[in-house]
Length: 155
Image (cartoon, rainbow, N blue to C red; front, top):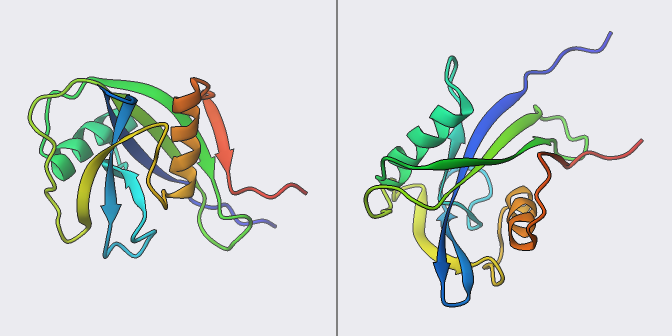
């Protein structure tokens, strides 16, 4: 009998703005988190808490990690994610974008974030967390499916 696994939900927020070189995204450089440290990632992201919607989690994370409020979220995609058959829990990630908010994005958790910076979607820094890179590529190309997967091996 196969044991059921717990799917862990997370919400991601890509803040977007128009820049001189096209659409820009705000990314954070991760540190001291134990996962993908020294990689660029969504400026705000985190687990969805019990009894919380992904939408509410995205708003909460934007406030907790960037100090912004009144964020106008647009749902982009959901991603079912694994690590290629590795013995980890599987995840469901909900990605949102926002082009308007109140306040200036600021690093609120410096112990987890080295810096935040704006980058054109056409010139992302290296390295970017791989599954987030997949969504950013879709945003750049204007083709983000409503549902995607990452890390599964075909059998």
